[in-house]
Picture 1 (cartoon, rainbow, N blue to C red):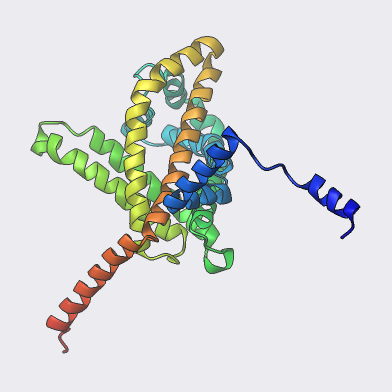
Picture 2: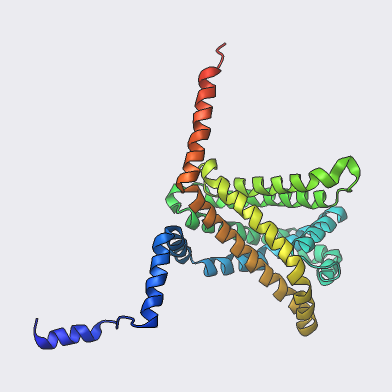
Length: 308
C-alpha cells in the first residue's frame, strides 16, 4: 500500500480513546467480561426493541382493549361492570373518584343503544389486535418463527374470552368479604396463583406449544412478581399524576394517565418475558428441570402403569 493509501486508511479510522475515557472504556469492558449475562441482556434488549414493543403493546391496549371493555361492561350485568371497573381502578392505583368519567360512560344507557350488535362485533374484532400484538411480542422474545406456530389468528381470538374470565375471577376475588371463610388468608394466595397460571398458559398457548411448560415457568413467575410491584408502585405514583393531568387537560388527562400506565405495564410484560427466557436458558434452571425429569422417570419405574 502506498504512503497516500495508508494515510487515507488511518484518517478513516476512529480515534482510539485516551486518558480518562480510555480507562472508563476498559473498566466497562472488564465489568462486561466478568458479568456475561449483562452483555447478553443488553444485546437481547436491543434485538427485541424494548421501547418499540412496549409502545406498540400499550397503544394497542389503549386503542382496542379499553374500548372493548367499555362496550362489554355496557352490555354486561351491573355487578360484572362494577367489578371490572373497580379492578381496573385498583390495578392502576387510582382513587375511587379518578375514574368517574369512565364510570359514567359505562353506566350511560346510550352506549348500548348506539353501539348495537354490529358495533359490539367491531369492538371484539379490534380487541384481537392487542392479543395479536401480545402474540408477536412473545414470538420475538422466545425466537419462535412464524412458520413454527399454528393457528395464530384463532389463538388470538380464543385468548380474549380466557382473559375476560381471568379478569372477572380476579375482580370477584377482590370483592370477597375478608371475614368470610377466612378470605383474608387465602384470597391473596389464590389471586397470585391465578395470575401465574394465566400468564404461564398465555405464553404456552400464544407460542403454539413450541416452548415447553418448564421453559416458560420462569417468565410467568417473573411477570407476576413484576406486575405486583408495578401495582404497588402505581398506588403511590398514579393518583397525584392522574389528578394533575385531569386538572390540566380535563377528560383527556385521564386518557394520558391510562396510556402512560399501559405503556409501563407493557414494558413490564416484555422485560419480564425476556429475563424469564434468559433464566430458563441458564445452566442452573436446566439442572432443576433435569432433576424433575429424573424424579418422574424414577417414579415411573417404581410404579409402572397397570394394564387391563
